[in-house]
Length: 267
Image (cartoon, rainbow, N blue to C red; front, side):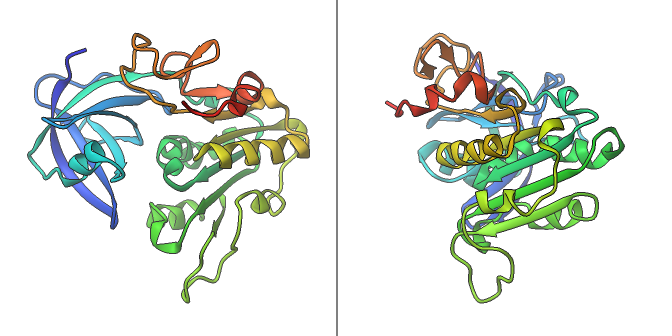
């Protein structure tokens, strides 16, 4: 339960309220992670929150993207190169990319949900021949809140990448509206498709419902749930969702296991 000290190796502002930190252990090496897992990040003197791992740094550390929405995340976003933060983990289940091999793949991200999916996308770009048609659809509030814009442009060379915004500005020429509208714009064979979906719960429910309506089996729609995680190891019970602890049984779960549970409002 005691966080290990990690040094901020680099800090990259992504948007006005979002930064990507590269963290490396002060001593030794950091434990390996699987795409979809999270760590508990501790801002000294402020508190601890779960943050997904969005990449593996060349230096051997973690890459993690944080949006300033509360006291702890704001403190982490203020961290500078050389500062020390605490890290526990990685914890939780992962995106099972092996299940998608040989199949069409749909990756759907809402807002900051693109961060946990980044390792999946990088794998798909690096080893596209292992999969069928690959589509990445992403939705965000405004063009200014879209994270990883340069990477999205690069990924678009290898994948079908489509982005929609809720509120366009004068520079925006792409689609507008809900991400579910993009499902109709991409090509996939529902009977041989695997989907990875991450974002706000309403977005995930709507996207999973649309994929289900198109014929993708619920057992092949993977979601990432991050409800009220506090300890990360299933001790405190804050993230209990019916029979599941999202920090232990999740955060990545297939839609057939959680569809009914997602009807339960967060406490």
